[in-house]
Length: 200
Image 1 (tube, rainbow, N blue to C red):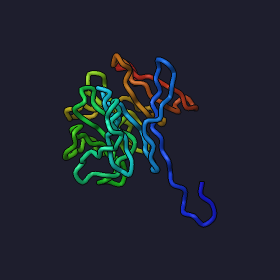
Image 2: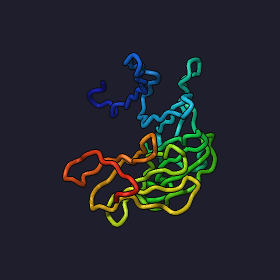
Image 3: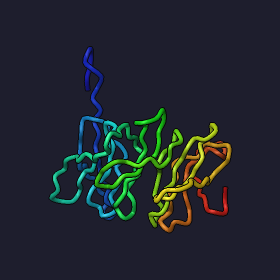
Image 4: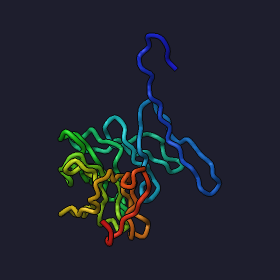
């Protein structure tokens, strides 16, 4: 801890893995900077994290060096903590405010490259792939209200999922793809809800 006239304290981040089988927690990486939102790759070989406005891979297999590997995103930075890897491991969809006054959504090959703008409306945030990898769920502020949408990974029109006058956030698919779970204050308090195609 720093005192007196010293500069602001350096943020320290720890990435930890919880093992369900034996209920143990292991710290696998520590850094004196803010690191956020570790996402497992489908093959379990690495974690996708953001730090310093960039995206990084952190190998987690035994024997792999625990060093961050920067993902080349061309001239895109200012990435936030809303990102994920497609079920087949080939694509990354992520949110960034590099080219607009607010977060937009891009996709890029998981090996890196030139990102493709998918959702230009701001602010918009990626939140999860469908299990079949054909769609991704987003939350976006439209006409002053945060609602849920989904979009084909291949590109195309966005589909609105909710339209209540409420703050809907954090959508993610159930493993069978039949539901999208999200949190919302639509009942007057923050609760977990789920959406299906029969609901708006």
